[in-house]
Amino acid sequence: MTRRQLLRLGGVAALGMSGGVALAACGDSQVVTTEVPVESVVVKEVEVDRVVTQQVEKVVTREVEKVVETQTVVQVPVERIVEKVVTREVETTVEVEALAQRPRAVIRLANDHASGARGATMNWALDAFHRQSPHIAIKFEPPGHLYAETFAMLIQAGDQPELALLDGGFLNTWVHHDGFARIDGALNKHPDWEPTKWYAPPDEMSVGQFDDDRAAHPAPHTRGYQGVMYGLPYQGNINGVIYNFTLLEQKGIPMPLEGSYHLEREAADLFVQATDPETGTYGLRMHPNAWLIWGSWARAMQNTGNHMYRAPDQLRWDIFNDGGDRGFALAVDTIRSGVAMPLEQIASVAGEAGSPFAAGKQARHWTAGGLGNSIRHIEDQFAWGLGPVEEGDRGPFPHHFTNQGHYCTATAERNGLVEECTETLLFFAGPQVQGRIAIDRGSLPMLKSVIQSDAFKAGPPQNHGYYRTWMDKTDHHHWQTGHPNWWEWYESFRAAAPPFSGEMSIEAGMQRIIDISDRVLADTRQAYESWKSWIQALPPPSYPLDARPPRG
Image 1 (cartoon, helix red, strand yellow):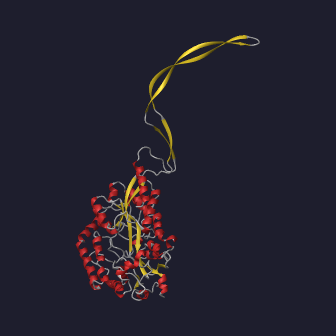
Image 2 (cartoon, rainbow, N blue to C red):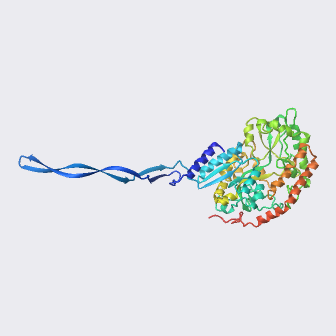
């Protein structure tokens, strides 16, 4: 937390602790008459005796002589001391124009956006919310990097903050263990709530969109939010590609063209031509995490593209089927053929630039949407921007789409703060904050109107509007977070590292991933069925979220 935020919170807390007169709304003046403490005062009271003397004056006129008598009152004081108790009224004008309204609620917010481009957005959002909603004070609590473990401990202890930036996997691990509070009732009271306004990958802010009917629902994000709501979106991610245009030009490599950029042909040629170990430049950087590259390459190489990580029955690893194994093998081969930067060189090449791409040593790199830090590091060193993604036989690879949001926890319900938390969630998911995310570019906005705006399309980097093209596609894949043991199952992705580091063959590496995944899914089958039954038994929202009556 910045010093400014600490000072602001301290000021709000001071107002919250002060008693006495309630201040008027901002911009008004108020006259307050207050009786001061009683004082004991000694007063000399004078009692007088009345003495009358007579004086005769002779007044002579030309015609008449007349005697005029006048009376003069002479006061002879007789001193007597008495004790008297008096009070004084003091009239004071209090100017409240510059004072904040006393907050009615204090909400703890756990969010790890405390530095870089994301930290800049969060700092701006906290300031803006304080100005707009002074009746709610936010206590910002940046968690550590092991938030999954630490936040789980807080839930078990019943001490989690009212709001937290988490993910769908965490929600579904704890939602049926009373870790979170549903907000759809509070949402339906707000005119700003419209479930189709945001890009909405399934089972991340809500529960109940089970991953068992892909043919009927190939693009769940296009339908808006469904089911019982526990949070609202804050930041999104979608994997795409950025290029160092200057490096391509220097090496005489033509810019890729959509429709003619196959993984096994044109893309492979670009990687080879951009690679020169003597000068330290490479075609790309590879990563063993499926989210960044190889998951999309695996689906691009499938014959149908319908196989995501888990099968719809939730019992089997699925992405290597139907030709997906070819995409995984191509990813590993970029390391073994030398067109991807060796893993052991990445840190030294990245240096202070933060990544080999920002250091100008890489032709093609992944992007998840958060380019703000790269913009700061690269500045005007070289020309760069978004471009076509690699393709399989069916066309461009399916993008990996995720949505991370703020969730309302059970602490808010215990403290009677669900409505205040919902108001806060709508602000962070609304046009002001989402528009600021588009400026700082630490992640992707999730509000569709912001993605469509001219400010979002403008550089840097070049071709920033490509993101909307990718986000509007209908063949995305996602993390499939609808599983109560998602985090345990997720470790199967991390098991992909041995083939990339050369410690295991490609075939053995794929089998290892399959075995670990299927074992976890089998061991947690009963937990999955119990979780699913719990969700299906939830009372439905007060209105169907996609068919609510119009507000009059």
